[in-house]
Amino acid sequence: MRLRRRVHQDPGRDLSPAASVADIAAVRAAIVAARGAGEDVPIGAVVLAPDGTPLASARNAREELGDPTAHAEILALRAASKIYGDGWRLEGCTLAVTLEPCTMCAGALVMARVAKVVFGAWEPKTGAVGSLWDVVRDRRLSHRAEVVGGVLEAECAALLEDFFHRQRGNRTG
Image 1 (cartoon, helix red, strand yellow):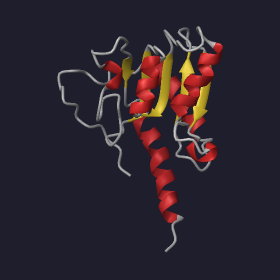
Image 2 (cartoon, helix red, strand yellow):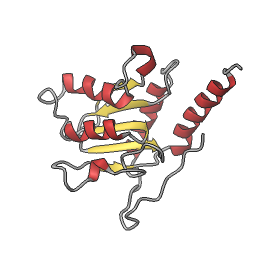
Image 3 (cartoon, rainbow, N blue to C red):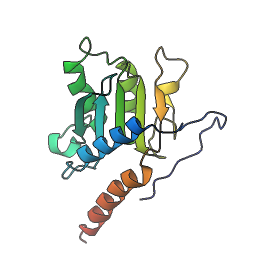
């Protein structure tokens, strides 16, 4: 599996400003969460309060839960919203994730009013934060999040590449 950044339709827009030390630490925490994914695709997510305090972390659990919505981002947003804000708004919070969010997850973070999304590997096939679509910065929506992509990209991509290499090696027939 080869993950790489895809050129967005609007080349004048900077899709990945420089990552801060806090951004790198957040993606490292998401990597730790991803490593606990078991038989699920190793994607991890962490939600941080505006002051940088971790609120929740999660990893993909679609296979484990038999739930197509059990993406790491969704699970982390749900857990964080139970302990922060008014029950669903995560205003001022940051979501860090190892892989560029899909349309479902990008829509959820917009609806939760997440201020910033930081991610590791770009996802050219389903990415909705700059690769294929750019849901989180769509000017037609009432909320737009800041985006920092490609943070620890090689490390995040390696988690996925290793997982899919093992999956292919386990196939019989």
